[in-house]
Length: 152
Image 1 (cartoon, helix red, strand yellow):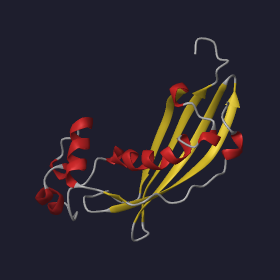
Image 2 (cartoon, one colour):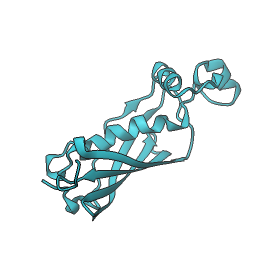
Image 3 (tube, rainbow, N blue to C red):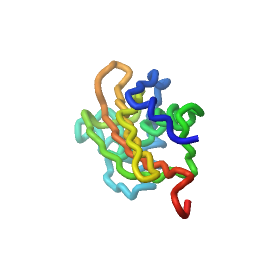
Image 4 (cartoon, one colour):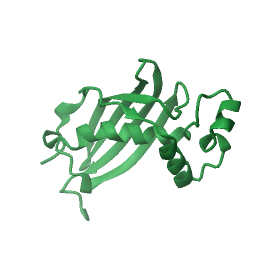
């Protein structure tokens, strides 16, 4: 089965809220080599005007990928994840993510373009706090190789 281009323009229902925890932020900061004290020490974060430890900017991908899973796992979408290559990721931050936030994400399939045996799929994850205020937008593009591509 190939990628279902009819999914372009689809919007998924909001994900259940993701509760941001201090330990998740610390683990992510360690994994990406972020060393600023505001990622680890609540007092340091408060000294900068934040209510609790703040996440590194790319932490938003953790939340976005939970929403993207709705699309990737949909059997009607036709995505064989063993044939996926990550092509691009862009972040627009509206406010920092901090421990204690509850984040809700709505996934949009913005485009699906097929060329030369590849499907280029661009999704947009709109992340909001449970108060409805915008937090971040994560735009991701993946390339899905078709079975007819040589060497795949």
